Image 1 (cartoon, rainbow, N blue to C red):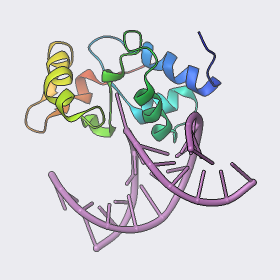
Image 2 (image 1 turned 45 degrees about the vertical axis):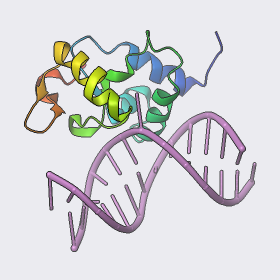
Image 3 (image 1 turned 180 degrees about the vertical axis):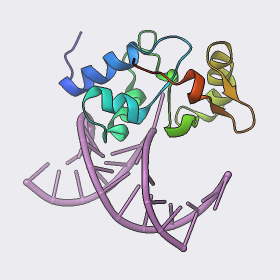
Image 4 (image 1 turned 120 degrees about the vertical axis):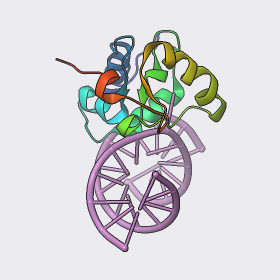
Length: 106
DNA sequence: ATTTTGACTTAAG
DNA sequence: GCTTAAGCCAAAA
């Protein structure tokens, strides 16, 4: 187990803490990690994805619930199908319903 | 140390 | 709603 940068660890922790059936935006994760503007860096971390089974990177979406990132095929198969059972989608726009499935830290 | 790049975000046209 | 521009951050070369 290698030790990553503090911010990196925090980001992974935050993503791991995302409850099932809910999604968080990059900006949200970045903010919870301590840097509200590090959304880009967060995306990069997800891209590396050191532990796919422990880090639900598929639960991290773009601002407004846009299904950006990942691969094109993934959005159609993996992501959409997986989320379809957990997260509510907006068929009208192919986006995640942040209003209902948006991760909220009470 | 400087430059490039990338799974971002927001604002403006 | 989509495209362009600018902002901001972190890691790799």
